[in-house]
Image (cartoon, rainbow, N blue to C red):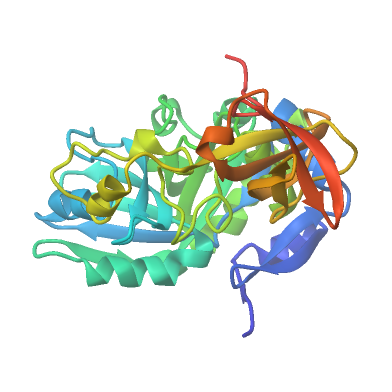
Length: 364
């Protein structure tokens, strides 16, 4: 299958992006002048710019939309204010995760949903299969471009191209009818890096102009284009779970530490009965700090002595922290912070210690 291109493809090539296939798209994994580590550090200490136009966007509208969302998703969307965002897993009937997503309340009876790129067709089919009377789901992904501005200097840079009323003040909120560099866009304040930052959603054709305007606005602050490589190392340092790694159709949101977004007191949601029946999770997502020599990647068996207690789900060298880290799904009773474990990395044991998550947390 031939990969798609976002409207920013030519822009990435112009900036020296090394293009690779990802979730059906050709996207930059890194840029020639910087590389993953410099891009990662730019986000931690200054600001980085990402093309996330490959993500999926779905509108949900109608008088029955709130009831439909509360049935479809594990979180509770009752009582949200206009412009509020809420994170939620979406479960199957067995309690596994179909996807994790963010829901924005635009106004009464109108919600904007952002889903993972690799799952957008599957998610949309699942939503249509569970669409109830009075609610209509519409996939608008092809029309929407998305740019993420992430880092401690994000607000300063954005304020050069956006008026104050276009910039959301609270974390997990948005301005639905904002403007940046004169371009109409929804501006949200969420992010997937562990830093403060914004996502700008606009007509996909306008994305290149907005990218250039932001690069110009951030010139004096060293705004750095960033690729998929830095996006992954940043989210891992911040211990943010990734679909297909820390959760999937057979891993429940409770096992992967998302209890805060699973409202068991709701009358019903898809997967609730299965989660109730399963009881307390027997597996738990944990953080591992590598204390031996080597890097623990995804899929390594984790041991205490000769007993296999689980498997790593993600792992890499953490550029800002300066040492390798990993996340793993292990037996719940073996998940105590401070526990010494070993990972089997290609037949060699690498020592690690169970540590509290997140590995990195921004100050202030």
